[in-house]
Length: 272
Image (cartoon, rainbow, N blue to C red; front, side, top):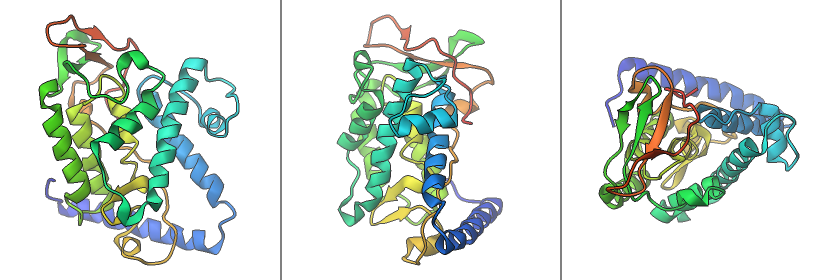
C-alpha cells in the first residue's frame, strides 16, 4: 500500500469527523435510517452499473430491490441490476459474520456468479481462460490496459485473498477499501464483470476485514457505540489512468483464438 501523505490524513480525518456527527443524529432517531440505507444502496448499485452502460434511475433500482417492476429500465438493465443487488445483499449480510469470516477464492467466484449468472456463456463464477484487455473507443486497436496472463490467475488470486484476510489491517478503512478495489480490477480475473466485482465488495460501508468491519471511524471499529454510516462513494479503477474517452472490455476465450469484444456497450474511463 502506498504511504499516506499529510493531505491524505487530513481528508480521512475530515471524513471520520463527518461520520461521527451523522452517527449522533442516527442514534437520536432511526425512523429514517432504513430508507437512508436503501437509498444509498440503490445509488451505489445504480452508479456501478451505469459505469458499465446499464443506466437505471435510483427510483428504478429501489423498485427492483423490493421486487417491483421498474418504470423505465428494460429487461436487460433489470437483469444486470438484479444480479448486482443479489451480490450486494450478501456482501452486506457478511457484516454479521464476525470472527468466523475469512475470504476464500470460492467466495469471490460465488459473488461473481450472483452478479453475472444470467450470462452463462461468459462462464460466471470461473476464472477466465484467456487474455482480457481494455481498449479505447478512440482507437480500438490499442489496449489501454492489458490484464495479467490467465496462467497467473491462480497465484494472483491466492495473493489477493491473503491480503484481504491479513494485509494492511491497520490502514484507514477508506484507504483499504480503495486498495481492495485496485487489486482485483488490476488482475481482471473474469471474462466480464470485473469492474462491478471490484467495486461491490469494497463499497466503504460493507468492507469486512479479519475480526472487524471497516464501516466507520477507527473509534467505532474498536467497539464504540453507534451505528455505522454508509457512504455511496466508489473508487476509480486503473482504467482511469488510460486516455480519456470511452473504453470497451475485450476478452479472448483462450490462447490462440480470435479476440472478440465481450460487449459493444461504451464504458466510461473513470468511476462516477
